[in-house]
Image (cartoon, rainbow, N blue to C red; front, side):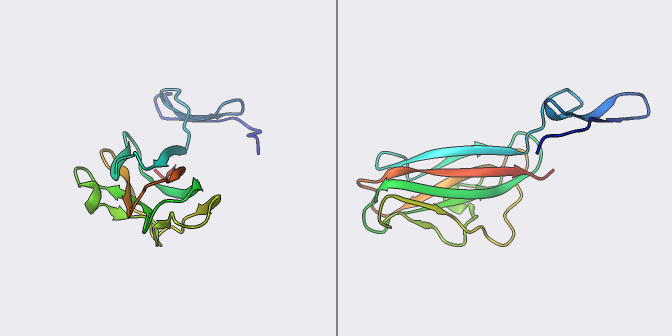
Length: 153
């Protein structure tokens, strides 16, 4: 739905705090467009790292919004993928899982599935990272893992 009306918030000194421009959307005081969604796609192949950081918060408060997985070739025995949030300098293996269950990458291909988020997804602030964890035998696996993060503050 397009924005039909402009709105500008100004402080007592006349400085623009934020505004909504129908042609661009919401902008902050520096005229930067405020986009409330970031998306990261990670290739799922036998050659990728078993776990890795994939995104770090620079500003604002974020949370995982949606996670999907699609593959055209299944992984080997017990292959799974999970999304975790790692506060500050926490190792990937010690991150907080964001899905109620890891994706089973042995489900017949082609497959496209959306994960179920935990009841209260972890809020991420400056310096927190998003990561993935893989397990099992990845031999033969071909697909992608896509994570959308939503800005909540």
